Length: 485
Ligand code: ADP
Image 1 (cartoon, rainbow, N blue to C red):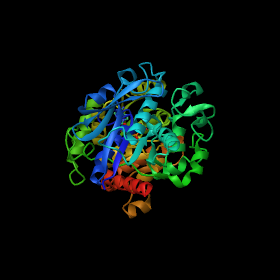
Image 2 (cartoon, rainbow, N blue to C red):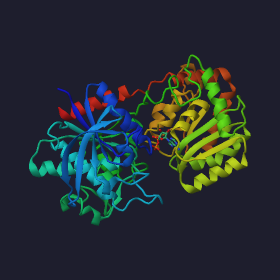
Image 3 (cartoon, helix red, strand yellow):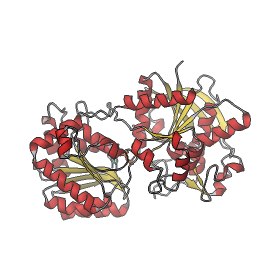
Image 4 (cartoon, protein in one colour):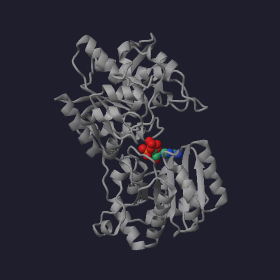
């Protein structure tokens, strides 16, 4: 019988994206469908999500524990993906970022907004739609985590059959923390507010709720699944994760070939493939021109496409950029994030005119042009659950320079005499999260770039890597089947 899966998340590419979560939520349903699954996604009714939604039918009007009523409708997203939306304008009809207001302050009612997402998922799992009921629920990150405790308590009190919940952590550091007072509104019994429940040091933690109550926890790379079980990267939740170690696993994200493929990409000036790279040279010149850099075909062009935060190692970029420019490199940087980093990086642009270009903001088409035109993508993260930009870099012949951590460690093979011999090298990997570590890696990539034959070999090997969503979807299906058995 076909496995019916309800995917719950707050973002969905291409309709609403603030980071990698959206790419995953947007790509996974189609990949699961390839594997014979019947997926349906559930999303909050944010304005940009409505813009891609075609209504099919009304499903139910549900009352939340705080007595607010929300309508649930079913239809299609982008004509392809079956979807439920929560029609609750008072909660979700706000422009811009889904989590915070224009001054970057989290909305004061976020606990209710995302508990609503969890409660609606739980209702659907319990049969709120008479025409479609999921066998399993897959929730992504803290915004969707509330379905796990909601279902657990419901099933316990009504002796209902069990609908397993898989909870995927895309970033353990974003936890959805609220006060005890907020907990009281959200419909769980008081007993759930404790160490064996949703409490985290006197606070309500949505992340912990997901980790504690889900039937299985996944992360977006095998290495990150291990790292979060250590005090260093466990964000205070490593004890719980170690207790649940047998129910924690990692599945590496894929790349959505419909969106990221240099042979077909309509957003880049010229298409190319590993066999014929002339288009890449065209893209490089076009990028240098667009970014206001000197159009030197032989200058190593290094790139950053990232949230500008210290998690992403942007402070290290700041410290090492001058030397790499002296060594002949150019930089093209696209990102938004911490104001001090945005300002400091922009100052570097003025310090190195024609060598460094910094664009603030979020610009999806420009990101494509950067991967196509640049020679290397720099991802020096402090921690990295999976990381997608190094995967896009590999596909676009833009060599990843990464720190050996999380999904970066799982997806890039460092260039050494051995890996060159074995034809497995795909990029440059460094160990220590400090300026010295990155400086070493940047010098190495600049030197490799000067060795044309070696450079082309590494680039070819990187472009041949497969990070397909089909492979990831197969692993998720095996997991779902195991939980249902
Ligand atoms: P995270 O989700 O932690 O931010 P990931 O590497 O997993 O990091 O995913 C980031 C995604 O967001 C990638 O698709 C990347 O291309 C994209 N991205 C990041 N910053 C920008 C930006 N300023 N403009 C366009 N795309 C961006």
